[in-house]
Image (cartoon, rainbow, N blue to C red; front, side):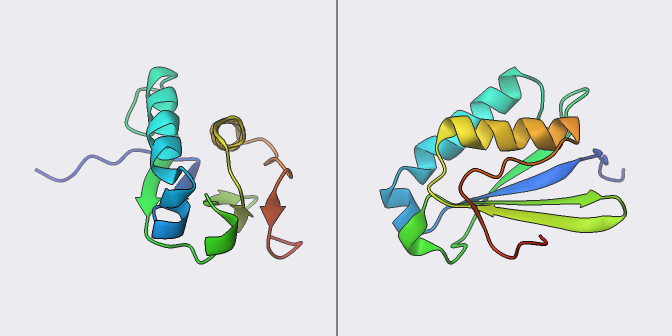
Length: 114
């Protein structure tokens, strides 16, 4: 039996590196996962479309916790990276992904065109 495919609007990677862990990344990931699960936004829920993964180090160790977002928008890959992420910001990013809306600019870093 083949694996089931779940459509996603985007993928969030929550840094799990040691520096981010020291800044609360584990609790942030768990809180975000629970909130997305409760709101039925996770990709495997009926109507959900946000994939959330705990990643290895995302390389912004002095600025964590960090969150990376990847999604296809207008036929192009859009990426957004966030520093010093707290739960309200992470939830706003996830909701924007689910709603296919503009991503928050707050604490976003990286190339201006990403």
